[in-house]
Image (cartoon, rainbow, N blue to C red; front, side, top):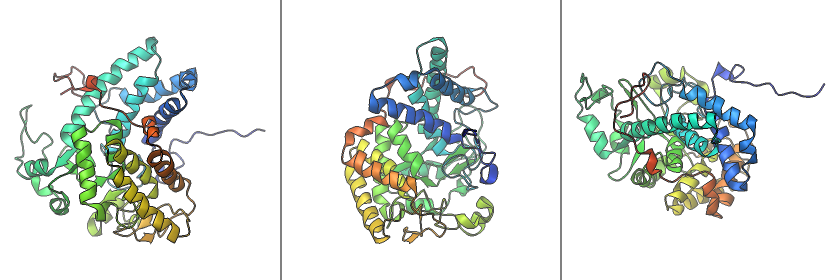
Length: 373
């Protein structure tokens, strides 16, 4: 008998986590292939068109929710273990936004395709407003949250999610520079997760989910907090790490996600390509070059074993459970160095410019599952 592929949607994964991000990456990579080769025949295959529609139908279906963002369980993305990313995690929203923009370019202009395009545009406008307005944090916004009043209601409420100012973590006041900002990790009723996530912020730049001003501010923050976010081995997957009681509650005492390890503030070489692509797009290639210089020196020191991740506050140690010769560590470096720094024209495969048609329509939707603000 010949070999067959058996689909796994998380039912065999550690913790039985559902990979929400994988469908989005498939659409993004299909667009990257089409842009790179100039060959649209693959994307136009009935199987690929059907695949996109199936993925989009799941994401665009009406659900019992009031936000345009996607509601997800823990472990739904690169951070595939219990790490407090349940709710509306930034990485998923950035991938969702990017995949929707890719689908607009790839779907055929037939009856089914046109119907999806209308739904996509409606969702994109709501999503881009929601993310730019409620996920963005800079010094001014931090000060506004610090002074929030609570228990407000109606559409005139300033503190729309009833966030308690006392829930602001102490570290955020020192971490936030005078110049700079970033998209926070999660926003939901009475909850704002203020941790920095590299992947979501870089994807926001590449997809133009971030405005040009916000993109510049993200790069300003990275430069201002270089030691914390880049350190001795780029790039921190998130910052800061959780410890003690917070770690016990957030991870369930996960021995793999101890402080400054793995997904709890570990440093991941695979993220080099995202940092590089984002910095080149915003006209700051020196950020990418400096990060690559640090990574290359460290990888040579480690006999080019390509560890999966590094541990420690500055990323000084090979991860205690890091696997070696990891394909994605190698690929992350090669894409960053060979495809982005040495030939920035490749950036067009993965990036989008601002689309004037995505400006939100400032009216209230009749939809029962989200609002167009």
